[in-house]
Image (cartoon, rainbow, N blue to C red; front, side, top):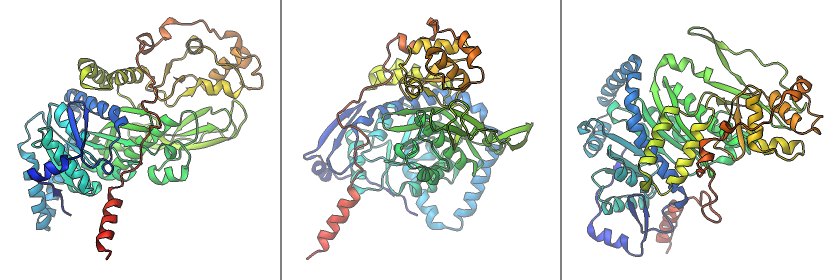
Length: 530
């Protein structure tokens, strides 16, 4: 296994590359793209890059509070890993020499306290890595990796032009091979790993959870939303080990399926995750989470997972855990749910999806740190208004209530006009339950109210909904109070923050996959032809 570290380009080649180039400014970076039609770059993803910079900067402030969570079992694992690496290195002198060369380039042993190493496994143009090195003061080194030669040359060129070549470590390698190589010794492991692929990140999860440092930050994007939202459940199961259901709440379910897949993979190596921020925006989902090592915590993993029962007609859902704690440190499978084949609301047939991550997917304290960071440096981020709005909406969510209802869908099912959002949410609060908005979809609500209560409120609002059965419908209808509660207007609405942005460009989206490999193959065939 060889790590290809890329040397600095000669001045003549730099001048050649800069001819007929395109210049793009984003954040503090000024990027030169000499291979306009070959190196993948999506300008719409500026929001993704902005929020990633914000999160990593906030993480540095936040992680000081987490050092106390480094438990004794984690320290033992580090010692065992070091001993294992020493034993293996004696058997393979070639790998030892390669790692020594890589270490001399990275200078890991000289890393000052408080500094971090970031690895971007799929760097493409390198704009994200260069922005990290320019905009995050605590960055020591950024490993910018891509397996395409043109992409790596673009990374080197822009690192030189932006004056950060001393911080950028460009490598040309298949991403999973690089991640697997830096697992040992333990001090090779980066503090942050960023994986932003075109499509699914499933093939990178196994190597990523092993390669991240103890308590490090893992940033993962998936753009295969058709699969994660239930269009091809058999494909989703093969990639993520869970079955999605086509439903109004499919985008949050996609987030929870991805977290389930990461947690299940980490558990195989006695590691577990703590989600910090999970967002569904535009055409992708992105999660930011920490990875820790603790065999005892791994045992509790199945307490954080649930199956989802969804009605195929009215989309009512119900979660049931796959495990329970019988008594301290004694676990068993949860009892089977009774009577879930028929929907209690509309008598429609139901489907089972999952398992999904059913514990909180956001961390309130971390969110506050992110909001503080973005509000203190609004001019640094081109999409600061949208980030501010999104983070506030996420912070206002009920983090202990998985999934959400879409009010439009509920009333569309019964063929009724939709009531004012504030009045509908107020009726839930008057009934003794909590409610919030969701960042995943406009006009959606998260609540701890049972489905029967939600539909009792619907029945009270729409008299013609008498075909919807509920055990307490008659009693509840007389008690429903739709009087608006001013406190149910979220601060993000009061302050008119940008919550759901319009499409930034016509015909926008994830764009086409890069075609460098195909172009290189064509050139080789042309060279061989007579």
